[in-house]
Amino acid sequence: MAFLLRVELPDVPGSLGALATVLGGAGADIEAIEIVERRSDGKVIDDVLLELPPQVMPDALITACHSLEGVTVAWISRYNAGANLSMDLEAVERFTDDPALAIASLVEVLPATFRTDWALALERVDGGASVIAKSPTAPKLVDEAVEWLGLRSAKVLREVPAWDSTVLAASPARDRKGHGLVVVVGRHGGPEFLNSELARLGHMVSLAASVQTV
Image (tube, helix red, strand yellow):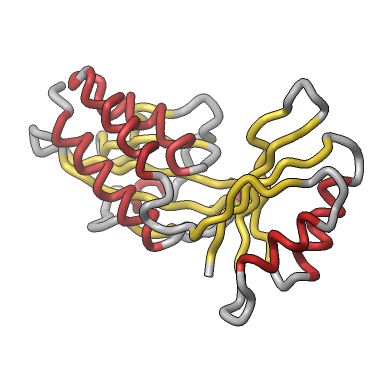
């Protein structure tokens, strides 16, 4: 089962390694660690995405973390469809605020909403793929992009060698004029996209496309 753990620890060399060691010793398989905030009091807030086998209880992770000096668990929860509900609502508010820019606004908020590194939206032009909107760190298009325009539902994409171990997911939609498009998001090195994330991505892309007026 996937869990998200938010933990406060000293912002000093070795702290993250010690945390990873005790979590591994408690039975957790760490998928990703993200720095959420560095504070002026010498502390850092990290989000840890991890997998737990069924026989290991989340309380074991809390106990393991508290065995380290200066480490405090802020929260731990299942990483499921309801985990980012507030972020989803904020995203919807953003892209419905200006219907003419709905897709561009969606692409802007997707990385924060889905914990990805980048997002981009594509449409078919003259038999090829053309970028409608992209986040600042989105990579250059690759030949595989044309294939994505034929998607029928949200899904995980196979890795693109040119993008070096980036985990990809995409969702197709049609705007109010019937034009087909696809939105792609990427995470460098993982974690893998969950089925619940694909469902959320599909609903959000479809909604943004239905809102788009230009």
